[in-house]
Image 1 (cartoon, rainbow, N blue to C red):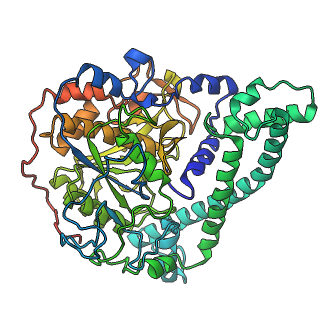
Image 2: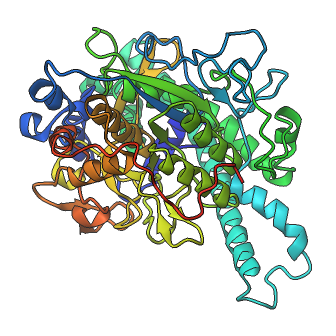
Image 3: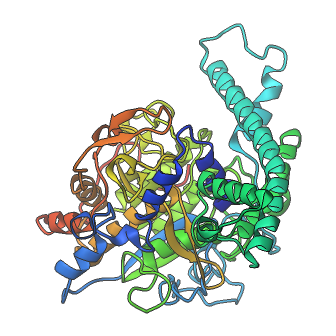
Length: 560
């Protein structure tokens, strides 16, 4: 899940699905969205969670665990959140605030991670351009005379057409979104105003409308409209109609800016604020140490799924109880740059992360070789990469999402890279999240990613949906495995997680893109949902291989 104001974007994305739940199905679906449902187990709870609670209760009591560092490459993190205090990685070799690179790793005052979207003067990028426009802007002068070329089979011309088609698709979708949201907000405000007066309340929640009885035709019409909004846009029980309107207005501002940016230089802000040569992977001296800059809601939510303090009586329980989160800010509101992703992966590896969560993605990757080299660097150092599959109801086998485990030009895949789709709590036919990407080879497995309750800035908690939520569930399970079996290599972690998935009792599920019923087992390589209980049992049967030398052709220790 990514883009302008990610929370609202996910709601808009879900509403655009060709398969919309009826009121009855929505009510049924709500039963499977209790706070912390991602920790539950099908055997004990009848819910398709990740089996975490059962694992702690039946397998881990009295066992010794080890601290595991998990890097979260995202939009930043609220390091002061009440449920994350004590779970933030600290670079003990760095002296805070002295303006000196004490550990000589190239990053000044990186006490809790690094911000690749910042400038030396303290300014930071929050909103960025989209990759399709950056590439279109770069290539357009070369193809101005003959936009489609007389050599249709030339690789450069094929790529140009791909870029142009993606740019046109993205810009059209952006324009449609601006129009849709702009028309929706006034109607939402009228509905909210009528309902607040009828209910004599300052805020309108879905249960209020279910109970509201009225003989006034205008109020009844508003009640029906309100219920339709709650269902269509999948507004969670914790969110009021007013809060949804606020998110819509924020989203509209950003969406308009994004649309306007299609006529400007997409690299101007980067040059002004960050000041690096974004075309040179070896230009490393950029960024700053402010990992709480910009909009860090998404990164805070992702981190809480993995590492929120367990059994402290507040908020939520994370999956792994001895995790330290290493926040790396590299993902803006817009499309991330391949250079930042590659250097973020290397930063995580060099500073001791064993797992890297990457809840972001895009459909063009001009710097894929940089990222591939970083992925290989992680693999050779026994670091597992966990990536979200995407939220476009798309087949990743046909339309690849980036980053991915395929090493360009080598005809090989990383054995330490997991791609994760999103699942819901049930029932069986609804377990596939209707927004989730899938793929028999392009997605490894699924994990809870629907209505997941977790931490957000300011000691608050909210419910989000997306494969962005599913990836940290898997990263958390991987961390739990390493806490108790630290000798496992990254390759073994992937093997254990994929080969211990929970299979559905009934494998027929609805595919949102077509509305057809398909076999859930065919939608990923593993054919199931991550399960911590099964994974721990399988891990106990293996002899750890961490530290064994990996020989991968083409490995480069330098960024280029």
